[in-house]
Image (cartoon, rainbow, N blue to C red):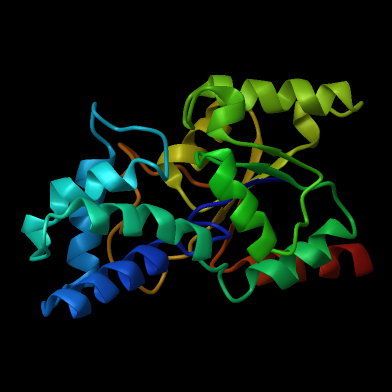
Length: 228
């Protein structure tokens, strides 16, 4: 199984909103977390974007005045550094541990390696291998990212057809994984919330092979199938 990490396993939206709320409290201001995510999304996906999450310093300076916060570099650095303490979704670590008993788990993240190491700690280090933007030199949905993972899997005696790709982002993962011929599973983390939050909206919706609203549901489904 291959996994997107940020947004699927790690609650980056919650981490960003918590950090912005702490900055607002310190500055004697207030911030609307969902509104902030809309501005974040627009700033993050721009030609000036750097690698994530280092790019959060730049993003903060772009959106600060729009969301009513002081445009001070120290706060941008705080937002960037907050990635080290972002939490997994409540079901992530336990579900990954269950899945790892049956499958080799491979992380595929647009985050930099330094951030991934913190994420892996938060998730209980369940991964057999991990590919970050530092490793691949590119970001999903670039097919080149996936091709490097395919080569690794083949090097271990597997095939692309053996992979189940698990992700939250229609834009970064579900659409491109379908085009590349992978079986995929959409974890709809924002099922109870409108819109796409901090993730770019896809041009078109891709119907996944499997669809759950939590990772625990996927782990449950696997265990039911194996027990049948």
